Image 1: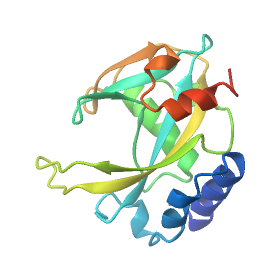
Image 2: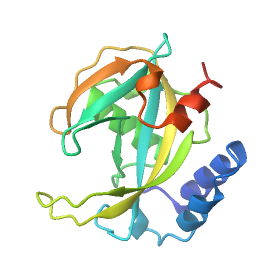
Image 3: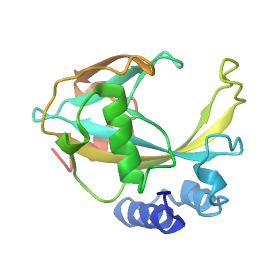
Amino acid sequence: MRISMTDLHSAIAAYGERWPGDEKDLLKLLNSDYPSCLSRSTMSGHFTASAAVLDRNDRTLLVHHRDLDLWLQPGGHIEPGDATLVDAARREVSEETGIDPSDLVLVDTAPILINVHDIPENQKKGEGAHPHFDVQYVFRARRTRLVPGISEVCAAEWRPQSDFPRPIVMERFKEFC
């Protein structure tokens, strides 16, 4: 099943209501070509899904991204079997960290962040530089054992919230902790 345009619009609308003031990026996303905006081969920009995951001690889950050599929140490209953006984010966490999807509890139906950011050229993958329209959700992990998916990440760790790569998310965490 493919993510519907309704799901995309609902996520953007929920985000706009929950976190007013980020309309600039949202307008660009509402005009994305559907369904090509879900495909990683669309170099004019495509949606991705990521997760800010908290454990019972309010630590955040970070993965060391193999290609970018950065510590980031788990996330990645939409796949054809993803029914919703939440499902895509949950799947990415599981693939990159080994946490069972059923152990990830969605905290809020509105994304905590929708971010447009540039991805550098990757000659190994034959991809030019392009933007990602990343939709990020907050989850609580019931179990915290990590088994990093070594094809995509070098490591996965529970870290203090101050290590989270986007300060705005750290500020918004306060509403959930």
